[in-house]
Amino acid sequence: MNKRTIIASASAPGRGGVSVVRMSGEKSKTIAERMCGELSEPWKFKKCSIMSSGDGVIDSGMVVFFQSPHSYTGEDVVEFHCHGNPMIVSLIVDEAVSLGAVVADPGEFTKTAFLNDKIDLAQAESVADLINAQSKSAVLAANASLSGEFSNKINSLVDEVVRGRVVIEANIDFPEEDIEGDLLNTIKRDLEICLEEVSKLLMGVREGVRLREGYSVAIVGAPNAGKSTLLNVLARDDVAITSNVPGTTRDLVKTVVNIAGVTIEFIDTAGVRSNPDSDIEKEGINRSLNVVQKSNFTLLVKDISDVKDFDIDLGDYITVMNKSDLIDSVPKNEKDIFYLSCATGEGVEDLLRALLARLGVDEGVETAFLSRKRHEVSLEKAKELLKESVVSLVEGQSLELVAENLRSAHHHLGDILRPMSSDDLLGEIFSEFCIGK
Image 1 (tube, rainbow, N blue to C red):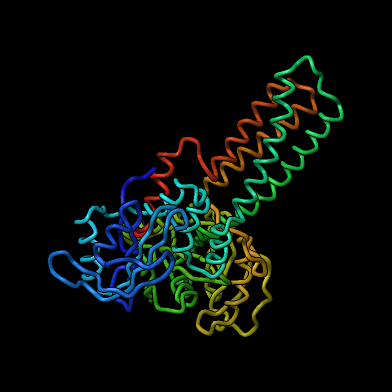
Image 2 (cartoon, helix red, strand yellow; image 1 turned 135 degrees about the vertical axis):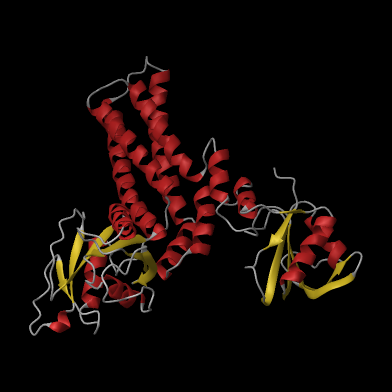
């Protein structure tokens, strides 16, 4: 159990109407009463003068006490609500430290909640995801994870695997009792159902990973095709310099755009041509090709009035025929070719709808929950082990092999919510949090 009494600002840095300073630990109530006098009963605000032992009143504000175990961290928690002046916040923290508290590490409040079994690790991660969400879909999905929807699905899978383990291991421990054929078939059928559920959940998790991390789309093409202009149209701002001079874009220009609730980072790259004018332009082209390799998708922009060959492997891409306003008759869009005018905006919406479809985004469906890559990895391993267990049962292999695979599957599923050896993992996860959360 954590014996530290920790304190930190729970509000974003800077000035505002109100700031919140949070304190958690066994000394919280004693320290708060030294600073504010007797506290009200738990969960009730008290108007008070927040005092410094040596210099008088720091601020006039409110204080509220959350008694263990009915608090965010599971410990005694006190919150000071003061005026939103960074100096006032600093003085409150300094006074509490002088009375025995310590400044919290990043994420230490949420880490304490996890260690005290108030939340599991997936819910703890969703706190950070909720704070960092950049779209409505991400906010809703993070809240779904925080409420326990994802955790409930994992716990249900764990229960199913445990039931299978119990029967299999009991028959290993008592070999004189031959396992009945009907019981063996029941176990196999239950594991097949569990495997299907893991597969479905894994699909949702992959969507959740993409929603959390967002997508990256490279914009490539020959010089003066209109790549930077397209970026400005997508961003609805002049984020990239445009010019008729070939080779204007040397460095990568990036902008994040929210499209239908999905975060997409568009990356404008240097124009690619076979005869660059300088070493600087050559380096820009190399960076462009590197971006293409790392991106989820590519838009190849061509000038419809001056189409140039582009003999480079782009992976999955759409060809954007720009400057359609310069021709009399615009062809119809095809699966991989879209005609538009960055000057007028004509055709841009059709391109974006096609891009979302190619990225695998369904505009009419909310992703159930946000997920992390480690969740995906654990579920993939559990899926493979469950598949091997079913095959072993079908082929009549030894129950010891089935039991070992189920034990490992149980371990990987359990790692999602409460890892057995978690020190390094916890350090990595909670280091991403802001101080005060």
